[in-house]
Length: 126
Image (cartoon, rainbow, N blue to C red; front, side, top):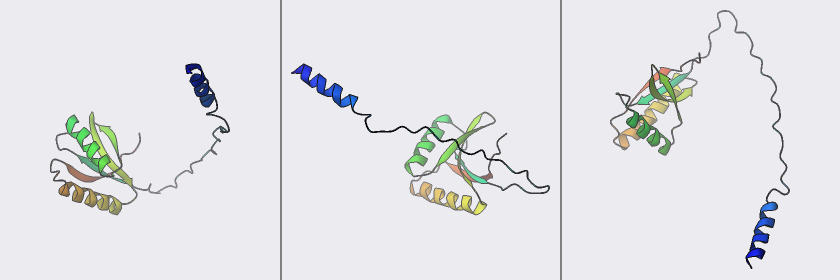
């Protein structure tokens, strides 16, 4: 009986990949960046910096867990050797202010008073 069961399992597993075609990823066309015109201003992006005022690691991990639970997308950057949690980037300062207002409302409802937020310019890649 055990041999029959093993044979069925082997046959079932062998057929798992049947009928599925694997497509190779298609090459994306090369994107060429146009040279900015003289005097042109690059679009400015904004972020909302969120975190404990003292940059404690435990507080940051608690904060990121809270942000995930409440539906906020964030990313972490290292500035002067310290981790910072940022929401964004947002195309306009008004969008960043709206997200900050929503964040502050949810933090107030959760009685989360150990966290501050501020709007900053999006850090440029160097």
